[in-house]
Amino acid sequence: MSPVVLIAIALAVFVTWYAIEAIRRRSHPVKGGLQTNIKLPYTEEFELYSNEFSHCSRKARLVMAELAVPYKPHMISLIECGTYENIRPQYLRVNRAGLVPTLVHNGNPIYESDDILTYVSEYAAKEGKSLVPTDPKLQAQMHEWIENATISSDDPIGGMEKAAGACIPPLTMPLFFTSIKYIPFHRIAEGLIFHPHKVRPIMFMGIKVRGIHGMMKMGPLSKMILRARDAMAQHLVRLNDQLTNSGGPWILGETHSLADVSWTALLLRLEETGWLAHFVETQGLDAVSGYYDALKQRPSWTKAIENHRHPIIEQATVDFHEAVNTNDALRAALYS
Ligand SMILES: N[C@@H](CCC(=O)N[C@@H](CS)C(=O)NCC(=O)O)C(=O)O
Image 1 (cartoon, rainbow, N blue to C red):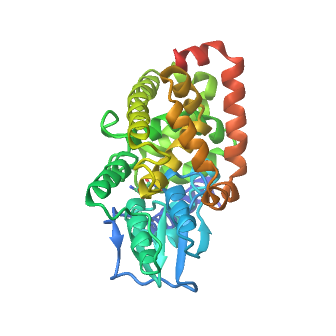
Image 2 (tube, rainbow, N blue to C red):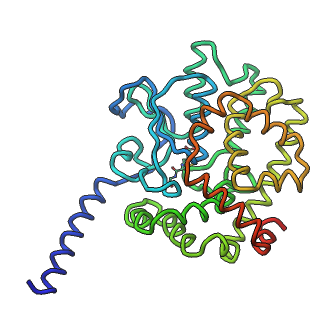
């Protein structure tokens, strides 16, 4: 058979495969809350699809642990942890947006981590457990702090000066750089072909090529990281004031609430990416520092965080700290 015919056959096979896969992997944005119109297979009353490293997933696992609601866990890999499992047909049947977390209650999915927090809290309230204060003024404050720590599905980095959650993706960059080193190119290529937001796999390709030592030499990226850094410093100063004024130990004072669940995940992300120590040192955030220590003493921390550490992220964290300690230029670009 001539090479031309062979190439034509290979091309036809690829195009057919692509056309079938593209249909199987069709994704679209989803609205938050309980989806009564979707019924998924399930074996346990609650099943939670989450990722070890994802900020929003950690919030969902924390609320389940805080309110002692049992669930069957399904761990979904994201590219920074190894593969694009979130855009494969099996998971897209659970969540057409290809985002984690998804909580499934008796077969009905609940989307958006903040809606999961509210849903689980309302469910547990029937058994007398609650993470929502009864005072409407405190409730309003709680929602404001939750919203402040949210990563938007539509525009994850929009409004950094307004919301701490929007600063999280840029401030996570150091760990993306060091974790992606362990992910082969062909895995990222899966995202280039099928991810609904191509800019994400393109960015991962770029950061894999560049490596952590080149991170702050990437002009627009380094600008975005520094903007997020400066905005986050202000959010933490506000948190510090809130903790001081409320008298602590929690955001609303004596009541541990859903706001603290959200901020546990946020402070953890800042710790593992090295930012928390920098902010505490430069802004003098004693209240935040004590608050984070207290959060880590709660039993939910072990259940939702320690029991779900991911080896690639653990190694990436070590690599990042080593890079910063051995590269003066990188350290100066990040912290001065
Ligand atoms: N607003 C959504 C955001 C969900 C979201 O962005 N999840 C990220 C992880 S924190 C994700 O699944 N990313 C996968 C990807 O973009 O490939 C929520 O709070 O649940």
